[in-house]
Figure 1: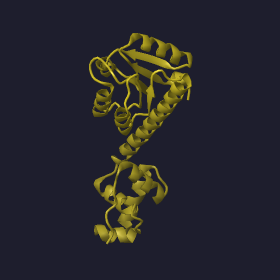
Figure 2: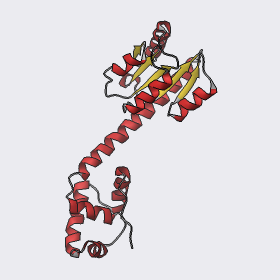
Figure 3: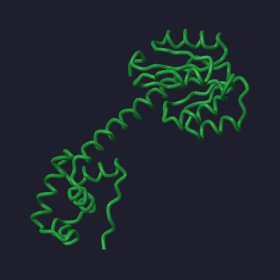
Length: 209
């Protein structure tokens, strides 16, 4: 991807670190915003574009690990690259278990930083694409009537129309009509596609007896 399409956030209370990282990342084409504290970062109006955050473990208000927890609680799901001059194994384990992309010890190699940022932004780009697709599919599903949703849930089990009709206590031709409506509204042409959409929405098919 084009670095200019994304933004890298740097959270570090050392102004010299912020300045050097900003200069370095900008030289590689990244848009960069810096913050001296966790609170400044949380209060910022984050733009809807691919991003990641380079986060110091030690901050004047919250620790980097506490900020990671608060970001998760607030639904701010951008990937995190931790940097520290005082790292420990337990810190790095906790950070990585909570989803951090990398944990870099200062001083770190420029290439290692660039690779970590590229990986993090690509991860966020993919996550945003997946969320957009899920949101679109959810919107389509919400156009289904209650009966169409019932038919949807039975179709993804692989049942034939007559079997679904027996389960729902309605005529087979009625199931056929609902099934056609479901496929039209969900913009699919096969049961396999419907199954993938159901998985995306977290819909569990009813048990067959």
